[in-house]
Image 1: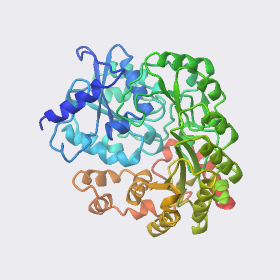
Image 2: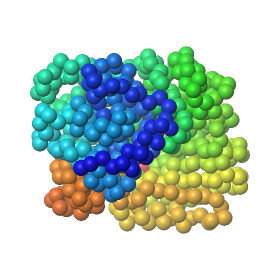
Image 3: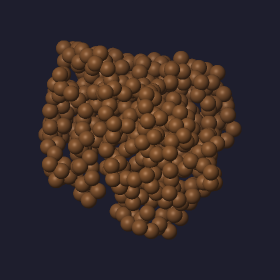
Image 4: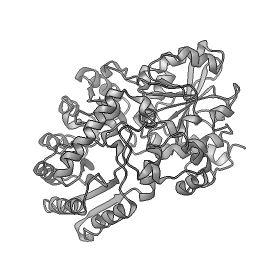
Length: 522
């Protein structure tokens, strides 16, 4: 394969529009290519990806460059993939590090390795090939469908593992020696070796994190915006949610450290996004948003009176509220402790504040959900609309996917016909004149995500075939895999699940107890 000149020119234009790019000479450095297995626009919206890029380039003996899946993969099928900073082919790097946050990006891992002319299975690679590693949320949830493709998986947060890993890499003359040197390190999972239990590596104090000169680009969801992390984890522990399952009850930045980072960032970027899953509960949010000379945006708010106070201090182009279900019965069961009257009042106040778009996030297909529960979504949104004719109400409807490490991991997804019917109930429930917009991911993609989320190592065979046949159901059939066994089957409590090695037996008992509480409450 050869490099495509048109692609090189497009990428050079992207890099030239960025701030914070690091370019180092390759000589004498450990060469790492950080890969996001999706588009540039999606990858550069990911704060974790930006953090790892900084962490590696902050090491004097490491050079880290990036690459992404080409926007039009069909156009560049026979094109050699290369790094953005220096147009270096991937096979010339010492380490290729994939950052994987979403299961639907699993097929793209195979596509990228094929474009790099690197064998996808670790057993087919030699000492002359780069070390292929993986980090990101999918490593802690369930890396098994792609485990045979990787030499090492990082379970946890990169800040707690990267320095020790690079030091071990420098001392190792071979992969087998590296594996031996990494033995016993918290958060390190080596798929080719037996895994009894893998303890994730997480920082106790995120307040000690160093602020960083961050990659900023106009060509992303957060256009020309510096992202500041206020908290990790969530105190609400919703029973379907992977975020709190991975990151715990919530670790918060102190006011001093986050203020220092904002003031430094404001020297070269006046748009700052505050990141956190539950910012309404972040104790310093109003102090931060009072910083002069900065235009702030924030992620999703919780429906309460404090959120109304917060929106008076931010960019009002778009405000997001995650409601999940209009049914108070279902919200109670998933542990989303929101009262209907609080949701209604918060949304009314947001619309009255001249917000351009109020984004409401709902989920369908939850265990024991009925059509009547879904009709409540239509009724709730119509009632919210009555508060003001100003602004657009944008509903984003997702399909419930039973994620590993969560209490609802045991439950199957709702049948396709049920999901299609409930989507119709929502889409047909509104008139064009009401200025209510409904969007949702494709149903097929939702089930593909469920397939990979609950999968085991046999799914690597389906992923391999997806490089030639993008239809995941057909690829599974070709691989001799019955996809319905993963998507529509309830997993037994005593069953050995593919990801059980990622938590203790006591924690699995906790998940079973929480699942039973859901079923009792619903």
